[in-house]
Length: 97
Picture 1 (cartoon, one colour):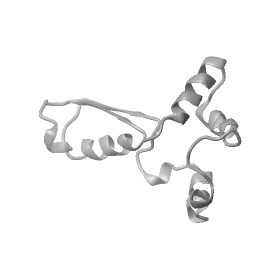
Picture 2 (cartoon, helix red, strand yellow):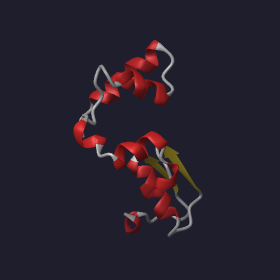
Picture 3 (cartoon, helix red, strand yellow):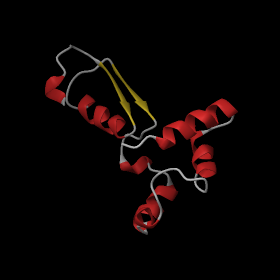
Picture 4 (cartoon, rainbow, N blue to C red):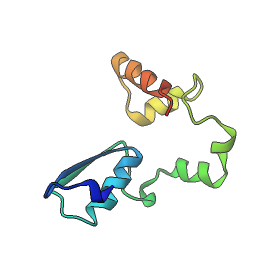
């Protein structure tokens, strides 16, 4: 990815796993700034519950997609407050990559 960046001192933006990618790219080339959205810079920033989930392999038992059961917890961690926020979070939760 880094080789495709030809502009001098670019602004890099990364969403989710892309945030980790742009952080690593910024270590290799000079950048004006990086913008990280819904991401972490390294594994040390993972929330405790994610570390426990990975350690216990709960991600293999429970679905990774939003469900009616998990949505309230996900909404809380995302900071969803309004009906509009909830609608957006529900829409994004239905997107399959």
